[in-house]
Length: 176
Image 1 (cartoon, rainbow, N blue to C red):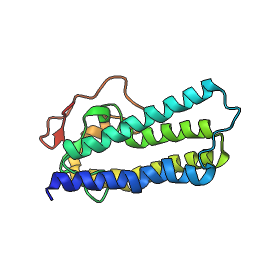
Image 2 (cartoon, rainbow, N blue to C red; image 1 turned 45 degrees about the vertical axis):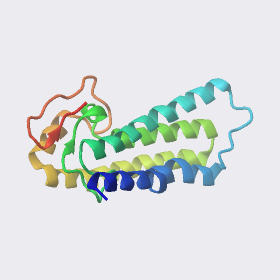
Image 3 (cartoon, rainbow, N blue to C red; image 1 turned 90 degrees about the horizontal axis):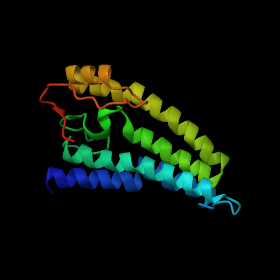
Image 4 (tube, one colour; image 1 turned 180 degrees about the vertical axis):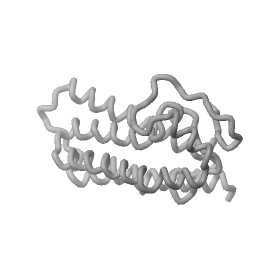
C-alpha cells in the first residue's frame, strides 16, 4: 500500500473508530440514544443542526489536508512531513478541535442532555491540555523555526479575521 493510501486508511479509521467518532457519536449515543426531546422547537433544532454541520466541516477538511498537503495522517502518531498552515489553519491553529467543540455544542443543544453538556466541557478542557502539554511541544520540536513563526502569527483557539500568509520555509505548505 502506498504511503498516501496508508495515510488515508489511518485517517478514515481514526475518524470512524477513534477520537471524533467516540466524542461525537458513541458517547452521545450512549448518553441519550440520540433521543431528541419531543417538545424541541424547530428553530432550536435548526440552530443545533447548523452547529453540528459547521463543526464537522473543518474536521473533515483537516483530515483531507493532513493527508494531501501535510503528507501524513490525522493521528498524532503518524506525523505529517510538512507543517500544515493552509486552509482553516491560516485562521487558527486548531480548527479540528474547534470544529469538534462546535459540533458537540450543537448536539448538546439538540439533545438537551446534561451528560452531553458535561462531555462538552470535559472535551474543551481535554483538548486544551492535549494541545498545550503534548501537541504544541511536539510541533515546536519537529518544526522549530517554522512552528515558532506560525505560533506568533496564528492564534490557538479564536480565529484571525484575515488569513495568515506568512512563512517562507519550504517545510510550510501554503496550498489553499
